[in-house]
Amino acid sequence: MPVYLVTGAAGFIASKVCEFLIADGHAVVGIDNLNDYYDVRLKDYRLGLLLGAKARPLGADPSVSIYAGAYRARDQEQDPITRVQPATAHSAYLRSGAFTFHQIDIENLPQLEALFQHYKFDAVFNLAARAGVRYSMENPHVYLSTNTHGTLNLLECQRKYGVKKQVLASTSSLYAGCPMPFSEDLPVNTPLSPYAASKKAAELMAYSYHKLYSLDVTVVRYFTVFGPAGRPDMSVFRFVKWIDEGKPLKVYGDGSQSRDFTYVDDIARGTILAGKPLGYEIINLGGGRNPISLQAVIAFLERALGKQAEVEKSAFHTADLMETCADITKAGRLLEWKPQISANYGFQKTVDWFVANRSWLTDVRLC
Image (cartoon, rainbow, N blue to C red; front, side, top):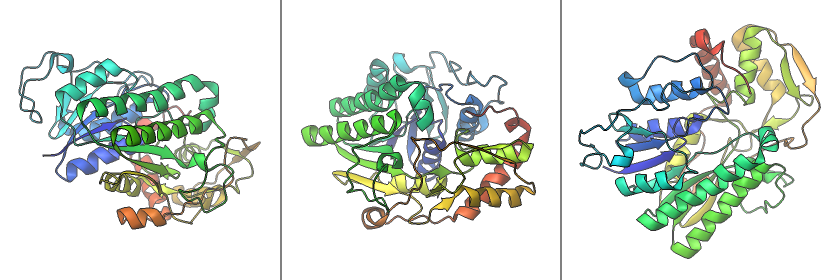
């Protein structure tokens, strides 16, 4: 049975990647540091879906995960993946079927080394990251340490323990100042935020390890991912919550800015397809030349919720892009991938999920 490491496993996209890998009959080892950049109850909710019957009731503290430190101590049962007893350094874990979870930070090289010593991974899906353009300006150091240094730690472990493949999650924010539609061969040397700069550095580090040590790395650049259980610092989640609760929507600019919205299931499917041997490639995963304005998104959400939005406009942020539009020709050619889920269907699924989980989402803090 193939065994895959998924970093940032409690995250929005990574948890869906875990779900799809497991459904395809693979074993998944997920790691996450469970930090409190945003309300950890969303991370706990996603982890709970992966843990199934072993999931725990959501807690009340937005800063502390119910799974933080809550592991089996010195469990002596045989690991179904490695067929040996858990290594001492990793006797603390949570497991449900083909999914095993360890609370590990990719910045912690000794913990990663112990993990790679214990498991023989077939590939690494590196989706752990500090995300968010605006917050990266407030705390740039953590973006460099996680997104760049954390990626270096994984590449070093792969080199040392013979794991050839990594799929590295990157961002469309790198295309700032480039002509549209954004294609992978455009120079992306003018990042407008520490977040974008840290992801560019990770891409370059991965290329170095490809050239030096023949690691096979596919970089996937995501375009405005949305869907159920999304991040609360992203516009769709925030807009749904504000409209539902009758609170003013905070919109930067006049709302005419547009994004190449891409549903999370499509993104997860493309990420997994990128796990094939390709050498070193950068591939866009986006809606495909179909940008949608924030005004249009708000109008759809108003109809779906049956409520009128009150819009509160602020100055357009200098680190934001006015429009994003992905050229996904390469994804079609190399991965035979294109988005299958329409934006409107995705927005409706997101609203339905919010309404079904309103009882606890009411208390979720927004970033």
